Image (cartoon, rainbow, N blue to C red; front, side, top):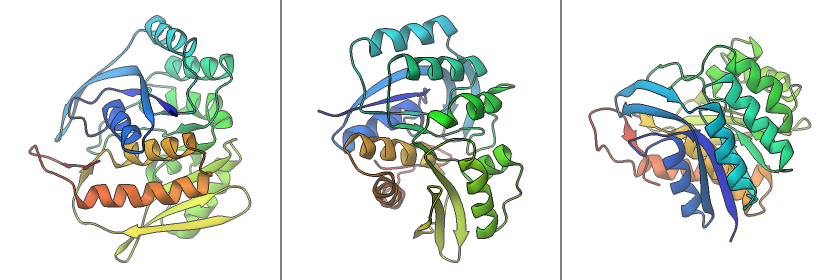
Amino acid sequence: MKTALTIAGSDPTGGAGLQADITVFRTFGVHGLSVVAALTAQNTEGVDFIMPVDRDFLEKQLNVLLKDITPDALKTGMLYSRWAVEVVSEMFKKYSLNNLVVDPVTVSSTGTNLVDNGTLDSIRENLFHLSRVITPNIYEASVFTGINIEDEKDMEKAAKSLKDMGPEVVIITGGHLEKLTLDLYYDGMDFHRIEGERIDGEYHGTGCVFSAAIAALLALGHTPLESTRKAKEFVNDAIKRACHIGKGMGILNI
């Protein structure tokens, strides 16, 4: 059986973070492995508190796991701390891992900051060049590049700038067209516009689910472009089936 590893934060609602990632992996028939980078107190209305795990414990989790199991793909979600990014980078190289998907989480859907000072610089410096795919949304792409993204041309400009930072593939998510959503895929040669139906409402964990689906599909041997198209369809279907179990955002049915 193929395996995929998520290194991310814990979400008590199960709608995002490593809980959602593992559910996605299972849905694709991939065995899910998980390492906790941070604990959160949150619900469907927002994030109340974040507690990063101790550096030594993060290293211990990864060393013990990776000495035994080599995942076919892995993804990072909320790492929160600069040193957590450095630990992931060191372990990626130490164990000669492949198929890294980086979801460079910066803020929650409700606007809570999910990174400590210096973390974004560390992601740019330590993870992007190791990544097969990075999946920033428009806000995150703007933060990393300094480009104010207002239209598709701006997305292309930002994608080129992000590609220069080292990843094999850049996918900028969250573009909006009339009645459609637009994700822009760029591999250094070609742009691919990946469209989906625009669905009204607010939904928790869409970025986590999208990047986890890409990681699962890469683990199964699909190309990055195939993985992205299939992941987009998967997220759209999960949004259509979303449930509202709390007072806030909908939870994707994955």
